[in-house]
Image (cartoon, rainbow, N blue to C red; front, side):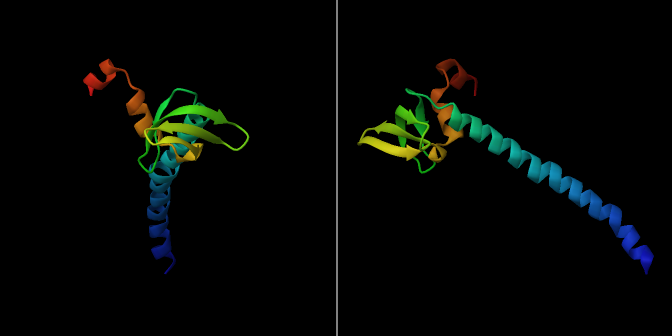
Length: 101
């Protein structure tokens, strides 16, 4: 009876290692990247919110972690965490970078 568990232990450890390397570590890297992106937002950056709103940052506030975004509809105040890092980087890429993709 004891041998059944002993044979399963290496398999369970292997699943745990795979889970850590393929699930937990990439999520931590993504969170760190998102945090530095939000921290480095500045006036004039072209952005897209996670809900799909396009605009340009007019001002940022460190006190409430928000920014004012200029859109075609006017000015809107958004929380910095609502800005999509992926789309903002694509919008801010130079024309030569866009041709390479």
